[in-house]
Length: 461
Image (cartoon, rainbow, N blue to C red; front, side, top):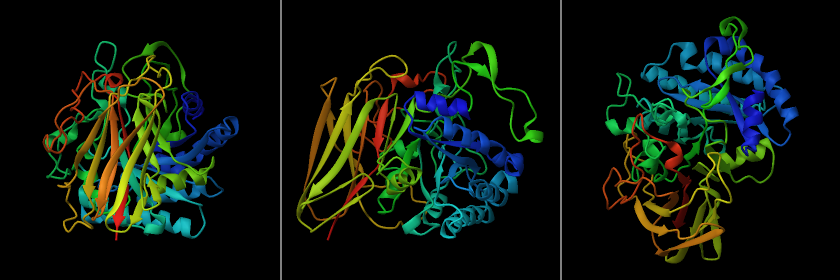
């Protein structure tokens, strides 16, 4: 725990979540065994907020990050949640209606713990959603809708998975896939997903990277569903430490790491903040403020420290709104999007200063709840404006005039270093220069950097 926290702090993290993987042993003793280490790390690193959570085996689906606000019941709530609602613990991993219902019950349990004030707050974010094809569109919508809008528990998924070092080519890397996205459909996979969804695109999950794809279909409903970028840091590329011995099943933990005597170039992960970052617009430095910012969607993500800052706003009629928010105006009001980008102010953790080449504005219509819960396209979404960035330092301001708005729309932004691009999955008229599919065995993550923002809505009436 302390290794993850001190490395996170070193790499600029203000907050992080310790998410040991769910299992029968973890539920039985692991949750409580790790808590003293987390509390010690909180005391030792007062400038870093350290949440306790777990990587949930979502019944009938993939993994998810679950975490709670610190407090005297954090262990007991997480322990009961994992015991009663973890797919691995309950033998509920197959894609069946009963297992899908168990996932919903788990989210309802967390909401009830907040309502009863056992914990101040709880959140769930789905991890690597397209990796195995088992997070169907209707399941994602069901997680989103499982709890009240006023205090939604499941609020988003990884726009970009962890394990980003996996694509570094041999002999100096593991020679696998970014995010460990190297699989193919199984009996539990949603049959509508294409084969290319099982790969990353510029390091991002297909659900997020496809303009007009599944993520767009969710936010086109006008409902909150946000993206994050996580490290998923298990064992770290180029680390000189190795997992200690010990019997996890007996002790609920492994022994502390030991010096391995060599650099390990076979691992898939980076330290927290070394490559992947999730930036939260927080009202203050506190656990509650970070959770409020996440739930509100004041989030943007980047890889490789591509940019230093991002401020996205829509304004019109004397009002404005930012990421995760909605601008309410009268029909016919002229609306403007402004994007202020603070360019990289120094070298990243690979030792070079990233250069932002282009920023894209993506717009789509808000069409309301999907009649078919397995919808994963949004036909109106497209790149409406691209800006070449001809500057290396300082701040760039970009503006996009929506004109007089007479229908509800949303906007989101992304940016790239310009090293790898391809026509998007839905064609050049939708996305003329989107991320390219990552090549298994040859995908250096440092040579293909992107940022993505969460959406903002414009709702005329």
